[in-house]
Image (cartoon, rainbow, N blue to C red):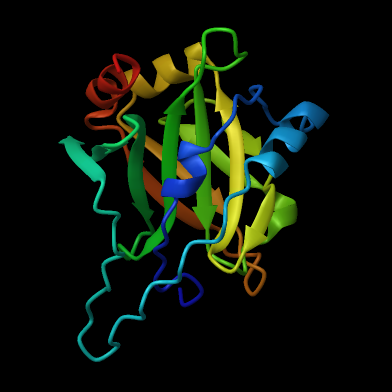
Amino acid sequence: MTFFNRFTSSALALVLMASPLSAQTTTEETAPEAEAAAEEATPAEPQADAPADPASGEESTPDLPENLSIEAFGDWELRCETTTNNCFMYQLARDESLNPVSELSLVALPESADAALGVTAITPLGTLLSEGLVLQVDSGAARQYPFSWCTRSGCFARFGMTASEVDAMKRGATARLRILSVSAPEDPVILNVSLSGFTAAYEALTSR
C-alpha cells in the first residue's frame, strides 16, 4: 500500500476550538447547525511538517507548542494547553504496515449537547470523501461519518459520539477505521485504534 506512506499534522488548534456537535450515524445527514458550527470553528491551517528522510526510514516528529502538556494513558494521550487548561484525548492511528495515517482528537462536550464527545479525525489528502469515515468497535455495528472539509494538512471528519458509543469504547479492545483512497478505491485502508487506556484518559478528560 503506497497511498498512505506517512501522515502527521497538528490538530491542536482545531480541537481547542471545537464546538458541540450532534451525534450522527450511517442513516443521518449532517445537521445544518453542525455544518455551520464546523465552518465557524475552522482554524488557520497548521504548518506542514518537514518531510522524513526516505533513506533513514524515520518519521519527522511534529513540533508541539511549548504550552502543551501531555499525559499518557495506555495508548491514548491527554493533551492540555497549559494556559487555558483546554484538553483533548489523542491517538495517531496506523495502517497494517504501521504507517501513521490518521489523527484522532476527542473533546468533552457540555451536558446540554446531544453527544458526550466531539471527535475530529484527520486523514491524508487523496481520501475518497464520498465514502466517508467508517468506525467500528470490536464486532459492533459499523458507523459511517461524512468528511466536512479538506486543507493542505488533510481531510477532516467531525462528529459526535453518544454516551452509549463512549461506553462501547470503554468496554472494547480495538476500534477500526476504514477509509478509501481516490487512487485505489477497491482496496480499503484499515486502521487499528487501540482502546487500551481509553477509559482512564476519558475520566481524566471529563474531570477537568
